[in-house]
Every structure is written in C-alpha cells, then in structure tokens.
Length: 485
Image (cartoon, rainbow, N blue to C red; front, side):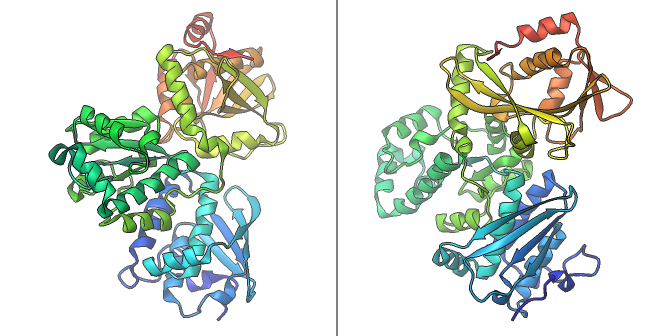
C-alpha cells in the first residue's frame, strides 16, 4: 500500500505536462482549487517549492490514479511533493517546506482534526480524504506567502434572499427569509458574516436595485434573518453592468480585482463579469450548499493563522475612512520601530502588492536593516502596521531594498511622511531604491508619476535615485499631516 518515498517517479519525464489527460480524470472541485487558488498564487509567486510530507504513505493506494493525477498537477504548478514515513496511526503530519528558488526552509506540524467533517467533504466532492488533506497542506504553504482573496461581492435577489425586491416588496422578502425556503440563504450569510468577523474579509453588496430601497430593506431586517447586516463595508446599487460596479468596489476598498470573489445566482451576470473581469473569481453554483463546498474545498479563504490584525482590518479601514471624511489628510501619529530579523517587514512584503517597490521579499544579508511603521490615532489607539522599509548604508549610499505600504493606508499622507523621514535619516548619503515594475504595483507607478521631479531613473532599469530639493520638501510637507511620535 505504501507509495515510494519520492512520487516524482510517477510523473512525466519532462515534469512539464500531466501524464493523464484531463478528460480521463475530471473533478470540478479539484479544477476549481487549481484554477482559482494555486494558479492565482502563481500570478504573484513563481518560486519552486519542495514539500516533504511525513506520515501519510500507508494511507495512499498505489493504484489510485486520481491521487497520481493530483500530485502531477502540483508538480505542473511547481510544487514538488515528496512523501516519506509509513506510520499506521497519525494525528499530526510533519511538513518540511523548502523554497528552492530562495534557498530557505521551514518546518511545521499539520494537525489532523475534525475527521467527520473532512469525510463529509470527501463524500460531497468525490475527492479521497487524503487528497483533501494534501490540498489543505499546500494551501497552508500558499497562504503563508500570500493572502489571495480579501473581499466577497454579493448580489441580493435570489442570492441572499428569495425573490426580487423591486417586484415582491420588503414584506415578502422578510416572509421568505422566515420560511423554510429562507434557511439556506441565512446559513450562507452566517458563513459570510464569520468570514468578515474572524478573517477580516470585506463584504460588499452589488445589486440592480434602487439604493434607497435596499437601505430601507436592510434597516428593517434583524440579524437573525440577515446575519451580515452590520458587516457590510460598501453597497453599490444601480442598473450598470456588474463588472463596472466591481471595479468601483475594488477602487473604494483599495484592493486588486484579483482579490475579489463575486457571488450571483444569475448565470448571465456571472458570464458578463467573467468575460470582462477574468481576474475576479466567479463560482458557478446551483444552490448554497454547492457554493459553500466550492469555497471550502477550493481553499478560497484559507489562512495559515488566526490573526488579530486581520480581524481588525475592516475596523481599521472604517476608522481611516472616518478620519479622511473629517480631513482629506488626517492628523494621525506614526511610530517607527526597528524590525529585528525583518519579521514584520517580510510579513508585509509577502502580502502586499499594490504599493511595493521590489520583488525582494525576504533575501537580506547581515548588514541589512528593516523598519516598520505603526499608525495611531490622536487618542493613542493603534491602527496597526501601515508600512515597512528595508535598507543598507554603505559607501555613502542609502539603498532601499524594498518599501511597502498596506492598502488600508493609501493616500492619507503616509507616502510623503516616509519620504520626509527617509530624507532625515539618510543625510548626507545618496538615496537609491530598488524598483521592479509589475502588473500589480500600480500604486507605486502612480506615486512615481505624482512626484516625477523627486525620482530619477538611473542607467540600471531597476534602480531609482531619490533627489530631494527644497521645493520638493515643501510639497511633501504640504501633502501630509502625519506626525512622528
């Protein structure tokens, strides 16, 4: 029953193409997992991983072609899986993750728990139990490097309640939710509500309805039949195409289109969004049970840890919005911290894309230093880590290896504050920044254009010199009200 220690011998010789034709083995849940989770990760990260999984050998059937197909798909996506150890009883699995591209290694234990739940998923998806465990293990590795989905955009009519609001009215919508037919809608909304509270997932409503009618309806609904009532971050309601509205939602929440999941019961609307916004994940579903199974087995909202910072993300976002409504450039305080061992900086670099200057997330030598910045309200409330900076000083050169800002804190004067801080700590050294253009760091590009007199491209395409003048310093000071503690 035991598989050989290295399953790569069951893969194609060139390691480029699956040995099984997709028509031979077809599972929509596995395809969803690879197409919208693993391949989404590969848009951001091309590193080669070798994952050693210890303890599962005796639970894998040598003749299971489905399992071989699954492992082959991981290999095709540059995850080389190695299996060793043959225990007959396990409650945790030792995982060794080796990033071959960056030459770093870490170990962790994957705890097997809630087996009846995994068996239930296996029965509903026709994926072997061990296959689901392996998919979850790799999902843990992925989310340790990158959080993929940050927001869920929801239709209303026949998605969150039964019926068309503009046709049947508020009273009938409430009646339907209270009926047996309302149970699956409520169960789904409870799941979404927990995503918001526990993981900090943004929730937005996108509906072809009158906005005033929607507001009045939600105001009359109790949380027991509309669980997401107090968790909605943004509502957009008009007769525009949903794809157009999703773009506005992404801009409003300061997130990439790639990080959005769009849920709508109407296949025509789903097709419109898929065609115009292929970056957005749009599940195909017939009922809420199938939809939930796709989201869970596909690891769409998987996380490698339970994080207080993630739980507070939406709260911090709303506070910043309130502060900006009082003043376009809010009066906030910044605390600068030395980041020993680059822990906080690496964490931010790995999860941030829109404002991140380089692709160097974690390869730093002993002379390299990192700082991370926390943002505080005037009453002392800490709103979390807003930025990170990694640099070295040598031969009169202040070289910034990477600089990132969390998407919650764009355009409140933070960019300008950090530049002013850099000018003070770098004097009299010349300042250079490593810069790698990508399809994701558009906020960096906007910033470079905004202050084109400040940033000078050098002969090396990936190096920018920062040249301060009195005029530029005056402009930077006018464009921030942030103050150092």
